[in-house]
Structures are given as C-alpha cells and as structure tokens.
Image: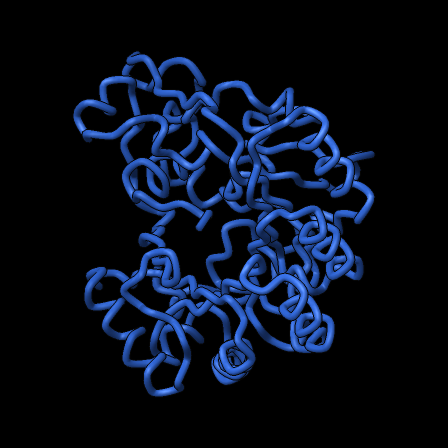
Length: 331
C-alpha cells in the first residue's frame, strides 16, 4: 500500500483507477493478452470450478479511501447499484446449470448503501449459500442491526461479515480511510463480535511491515477490545500485500509457474468471478476479478457460462496482487 498520508483526498469523479499505473509503467507492458513486452508467452488461468461468485453492489460508499482499488466514494457511481432481481438471475443460473458454487461474496463500495442489499443477502442465505459481506462496519451497516440480528439467528455462521480495518493502529487506518473513521469501525466490529456474528477482518501491510508484525499488532488490538478474532488465522485475519501502483512490476509468463513453484489453480480467478453493473449498460456483466471491474479485457460476458473461459494475466494487478502478492479476496 502506498503511503496514504502523502496522497490527496479529493473524491474521484469516474472510473480511472489505473491511471497512475498506466503513466508509470513502460508503455509496452500489459498491452498484449498473448505476449509480454519481451515477446514471451503470457500466463493465463483456466477456470477449474466456480466456487465463489462475487457481486459488486455498487461503487457508492460513505468513505473515499486514498488507495481504493476501484475508487469507491460518496459520489462515484461508475458501478451502479445492482438489483435484487439481477442477483437472483445469476443465482438461478447456478442452480439451473449445477455449478459447484458454495459461496456468494458481496463487495462495493459499501454494500449496505444499496437499498436492496439486505433483501438480496436474505435471498442468498435462503438458497443455502454461504454469504461473505465486505463492509466498513460503519453507519450504513449499523442502520440494519435488527435485520442482521434476524439473519444471524436464522442462518448462524453461514453469514460472515469481513470488516475492513486497514491497520491495527488508528493512524495507519485513518491514513487510508480518513479522519474519524477509526472509532466507528472499531465500534461496528465490536458490535458484531458481541452479538456472536461470524466475523473476519481485512487489513493491509504497510511498507516495511512483516506479516508477523501485522498479525501481532492486530492480535493486541483484538484482545484490548475483546473482539473474537484469531489474528493468526488467515481465514479470519486477511492481510493484503502492499499495493504501490507507481512501482514497476514483472509480467507473468508461462515459465513463471515453475520458477515460483505455483500453479494456475492457486490464483483467485481459477475459482471466482464478479458480477458488476457498469453505469450506462443495460444489464450486469461478469468480470474476471474483483479488482478489475472496468477494463474491457477482463469483461468475460453476460452469463456465468460465457465467463468460464481462461483469463489472460494481462494487468499489473494480476502480478502484484495475485501471483507475486499471493492474495485472494475469498475466504
């Protein structure tokens, strides 16, 4: 993560999340889906099975975080609110085609700002999917406390809410999310913990910070606030790698799998897709990845069947976040 305290905090006005990278990287990199700038065969990832289907509920958010991957903010509606009916149509496709999807993830923006979100979340749980909701646990979520308590009572641990807490210190968190965001997030997380929800936290590594240092810091924080999360459990304390968009990054070739000791099956897009509804489009589309909703090269089609094809790793995020960073948005 780049140092948020050195960045401007003006809310974005449109979908331009990769402009910094586009200016900083050599022009020929990540331009050809088949070959790298050096002419080597670019790596791709085939879908093994669709385990997790994500829905972006819309880019509107109560915060304008300094390095938000898709520039969510109180004014950016580049991804409009997805509707309950559109979500239901994709869940119908899963049922009709027998896809092995067990988890439905919801991200934003802030999902609880979508006026139909609680209804679509209820539909998801009633269809016996596990539901993972990414939230900042602030006022938009707290407005739905009664509904959430009802869902927890009915479905228990099938509903997990993962709270974004960018650092285990107030300064680190508010450097990313802005002043007065810390107490509200901690209070929301503690409310979820005190009421017995299945919860997790997502954070980021600051420059120079090791994984063990970060986990120890979060463990101390959770103990101090009596929050029921094991900071050393990767499923419950998810730490994303530093994402400095101004730094150059290697392209991933087919030879990298053996060099790195990795398999394409280990990469997030082997088992997941995300549905987005871009402003100006008549209906939602399926994107290859939760991090790349705007790039036409990662638009996989209108249906899950169309979206089952291979994904060419033709974006800096593919290298920085997934292959070299080893991160995944799913549980």
